[in-house]
Amino acid sequence: MIVLYPWGKASPTSVVPQGTPVHANITATSTGPCLAQGQVQVGDQADPNAKPCLTVDLTMTDGPANGKQLKLTVPIEPSTPRFTAGDAVVLAYNGGNAADPASFQLVDFQRGTPLLVLAALFAIAVLVLGRWQGVAALVALGLSFVVIALFILPAILAGENPLVVAIAGAGAIMFIALYLTHGLSARTSAAVLGTLVSLALIGVLSAIFSAAASLTGLDDSTSTLIGSLGHGIDARGLLLAGVVIGALGVLDDVTVTQTSAVWELRRANPDLTWQELYRSGLRIGRDHVGSAVNTLVMAYAGAALPVLLYSSISGVGLGALLGSEEIAQEIIRTLAGSVGIVAAVPVTTVLAALIASREPAAYLSSTTKAVPSHP
Image (cartoon, rainbow, N blue to C red; front, side, top):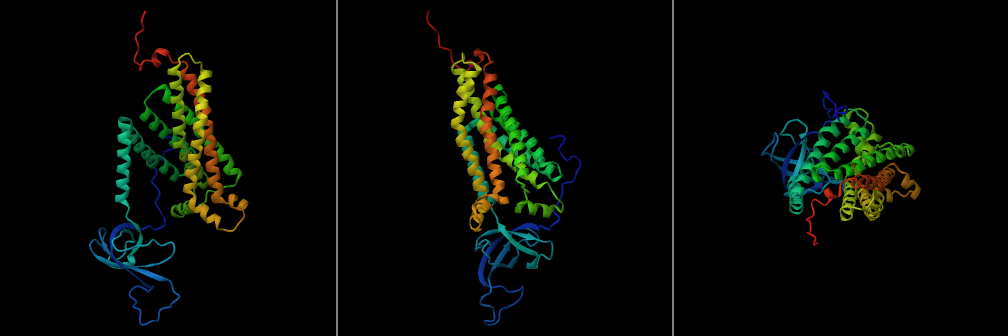
């Protein structure tokens, strides 16, 4: 991370004007013909086949026109959000005359309150069930976002290899999450090692097969990013970085479960050899890996659902559908991540078995209350 961090480099800014976000409340809406600003319809001269527009009355709640009334016209398209009276919305201000409605563009809804409420419910649920370990988990989650915001994003934008940055950042997130949540122990270290090996495997497999499949990584969001940056970026590397980071959460679950299973087996029977521990732990892992792989597949399928729906109505054959850029990306994401998850089970289990079998039996039973024996 020290080597990859863009020390002394200014953060790039968008070359495409994005507008300053300002907030407003909709007080009234009406539907009618699309007229130019200031134009008034006379009689029935409007084209009956023309698409209608939504006229929105707004009260600004911040920005240069705070407290003022504005009237904006929005074309009604299938992709246009349905704004109604009472909605809290976000506008983009282009820096022009604040009294001119043409200086503003209606872009989105305000979503801060429901997101904060849901985040609070999530935190309460974690704390109620996890208690102090839940506190550690929330702190680890916050630090994970810090790594993404302060290292992964700036390093990629500065031109570093996205895959290398993602592996380094994912490794840091893994160290923070596992050691902070589960403590400094040989058990946690076994999970860390297993996760590292699996992450590297996922990165290698993704790189090999994305190159073999001639994936460009140039989907809509990446193309928008390149247009905003004003220069090229390693789009395929960005795709691979997303694969690594997306698989990390499931990998943590698998590796921690395997190490915990091996340690509990060792505690239950300290006489087990590392081979016996490995075989028993592997049987547990086989049951777990199926659900873990299904979790990853469903996560990617859910994220790609609009692409899947669009592809299904395109009228092309199944082979062309699966070979298209958007679908092929999701297939490689899913399969490379799944191979890494499957590999994590035997790798983590053998590491845990080798380490646990060498811990003294007295240490393993130190947390168990001794039962006095009778002569």
